[in-house]
Length: 581
Image (tube, rainbow, N blue to C red; front, side, top):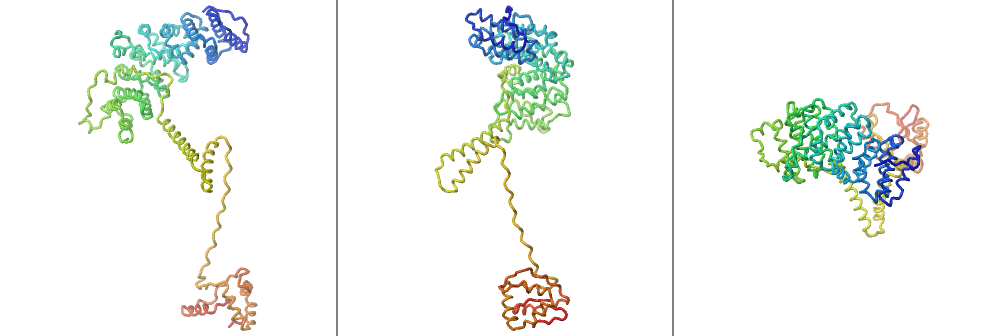
């Protein structure tokens, strides 16, 4: 695109955004006016990249405003074509940055943009720009790497484009990873690693195209990624550490697949059997076991790919040497994948069983008693053999799809069951006949209040705790019936008073009672405690222990018989008192 001067000078960030809105809102009745608007937009954003657009998101905002404008909505194909041609012709880093940002943003929204870029030969242009701008513009270099990755994983690259990739370019990418090995969170790590992974996938697809399509021309293309690792693997071990870390963190299915494709080639190529460190292989085995156990039933493609990688990992690498790492866990995993003991679920499909048996027949996993009678394996044809490169190479998944988890699916099912239960309760309340009984009204109110309470629990303050209930007072202990060996006879509340009135006081022996009362304060207080109506008005005084030894058993029986016939209020005799007859 030719340069076009901006009519209004831009001196600050506010004027920049105002000028951008003015350009995108201009009418475009003719193709020439549309070209002028695109040139003005490109020049303005490229000029403001180093002044006002320090963050990559700011440039993405400018690209998004172009996509949302009426100019793009009415002329989408024409705008995409013009910007793609600008990528092929532009040489300045500022406009190239803006163009690459727009193509990356638009391609993620519409995959057809990436396919048009492949058909227009943008791969070789990106290859050239990545080689030249790495030491001059780091922001553009990283953006070009992301654009190459996104474009290459959408569409198959032509053979002539892959043939232009040289060993020096692949070595340059590996050296970038080693240069930033001290910072695993550096953006260059994942950007460069993804380009190497997608290039390996393109090589695999190109080599397997003859097996899939017999009519395709047979062309031999060397896999530069595996070749460099075979010749210079010990110098680029940081790449191996990072792809294991990336597989451990990856949640996107397509990213997991391209990592597993490279791992399969490394574990089936003799020169790269021992490319990884032993500890890294153990971490990789832990990741594979965890992911296989966590995959839901419907993810057969990803499960098969994991099993195809697991077999050469256990048989060709350092894990095949003793001490064997997690042998029991691997055997337990195979039993689970076989469906042993799960009578409530459908048996696994034949491909899964075949791949599981392939892993189970690894020599150091076979028990001693099973060596004498190994499981027979049927010979597979080229089309049935699941371990061929063509089968793994042609496994694809749409970018952006997250791998579901068995745990998340279980939580989702429980949530759906809870919602279904609440809907059932609501339907029962809605269709039940009206009733005036207190029980029905109370039940409906309690159910509806419970449902509404669960809804409003997150938006209202918690209610105060209920009032504390008072505990019932405990009863007093029972008075013992024996005191110092002398049995205490029970005194009915009414009988003693009446008998005293009929016997003692009726006989006129008031002098003896008064003498006993005056001589014994305890007896006097006990007499005052008994009122005329037979009720106890005060506390009964505690009796003193006897001064004399207790009587014998024969005399005790006589005393008890007499006290039963003639109960009286007893008082202890004291010196100078007159006993009562």
